[in-house]
Length: 400
Image (cartoon, rainbow, N blue to C red; front, side, top):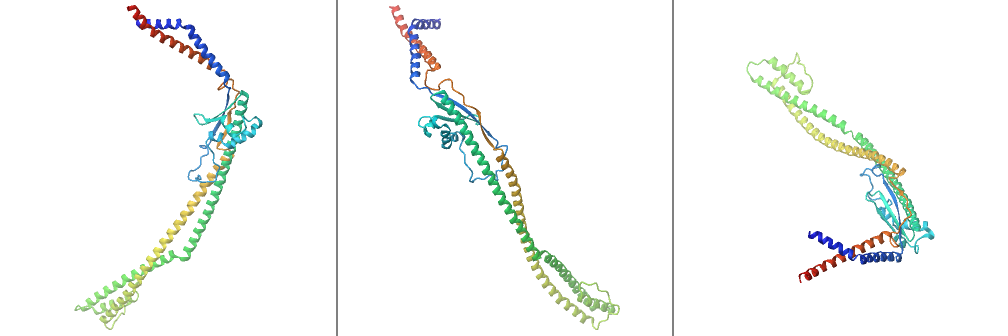
């Protein structure tokens, strides 16, 4: 009940002071109207510029993108729109209609550029003292921005095309150099003939090893024949035939020797001495030749390994050059596509329109209405506050 009584009391207080609350609201509205009339009106016209980025459609290999190159640099879109180059072109386009003193700073003060949330629209806002001037300024500015940005990005794509053409020419020159080096390497390897010499040397080593094995076999057979000759009751003819074969074998260790039918020796033991001496001397010569051949074999193998390593390195350089030429050819085609159809399109999406209401200054109905409502609320608050202050006094008088 108390809450309802308070509300009723507040309502009575507002109703009781309604006349000066209305006066306060009218005064606030009149003050807003007066201030609007005294403040010069400023009109703002906006245009939207669309930014279509096709970089994801024409994508370049990051391995070949130039990190440091003499390509035209470009600023973020809002900074580009208010750059001195754009504003100079805008002053030229406006001519005698340029605002104030016709300076770049004065013109920049009337312009504002900002990206939309999705970063594909650039909002260009121009302010002037009249709706027609604002419309003219915003429209001219939007056209200059579109023309300037389009020319800049087209120049950048052409420069990128020239960059890839230069890189491809260098890659082709490197490929020619690598191929010539491979041909020179193969010619030098053929002149050295390491492969043929190594094959012949390996065959010679095999022959020497076989001869050494045959001589050692002859030496063992000679020792066995000597032992047989020392035994009593040995067959002299068989011993003589064996010694005769050993004499033939020691002269031709690797040849097939047939036993002689009329082989007769004067003294088998003396003949065995000569066979063993000849075999021992020949083994020493073969071992020396085998050692020299092994050393030469290792030298040739080392040279062959170095030669193969050199050829692999040159071959790898040729393959790398071929791959680079192939990849850069593809990148050049992409750059040509980008030059023919610029990867970044800047176009006027929404032309400027004539503003119907001033942005600041002038008598604005919204501002006048807001001032009137503010006056009503302020007056009502004062009336309620006075009612609250009177309540304790009324209560004290009633108690007395």
